[in-house]
Length: 228
Ligand code: ADE
Image 1 (cartoon, rainbow, N blue to C red):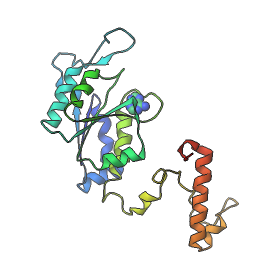
Image 2 (image 1 turned 60 degrees about the vertical axis):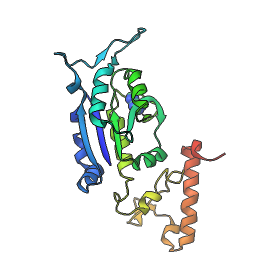
Image 3 (image 1 turned 60 degrees about the horizontal axis):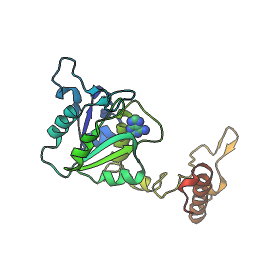
Image 4 (image 1 turned 90 degrees about the vertical axis):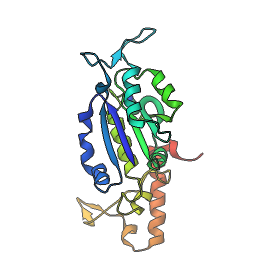
């Protein structure tokens, strides 16, 4: 998979070298490239924003640098997906991460301020797929942190990435429920004992207990995830 990121803070993405994403790059499963939006400005101040038409607070990112930056990345490609992090986007989920993990080329457009001129999304929407995605119902200063989260969630699902694929199947959200609680040695720690069933060796009982824990946890913490 090829990942491009456009941002006015390219140095933010130096963390891509570490952790799982760094491993994916070392394994040759993912290549990443960061583009500085300001490289596509031509004034002495390298201006990327301007006041909004219609008035209102804040600034809007100008369309021209975005147009040139994304043109330089996609050329005449039609199969790339342009991901636009935005609090007004579709909520990002494990299902979306799985969908995007199957793509060949993702381009992340990290906007700042009050957003990017809408015509950027409209224009590229006529050439490639555009997906405005939200990390959650809160407002960040820009798309950079959301992009890092999206990339981490997506790249770990690329086949060949995680050592034991079963660990992917059993985690929170993969089956629509929260994960069951996990324990390791010692058996007794600070007067707290590991549940007896997990030490029983009875695999059917363990599976049933874990399922029940998943349902109880989901009911208590995320009832919205449960079917009617
Ligand atoms: N940019 C600002 N807030 C955001 C959010 N919640 N999700 C994605 N991008 C954002």
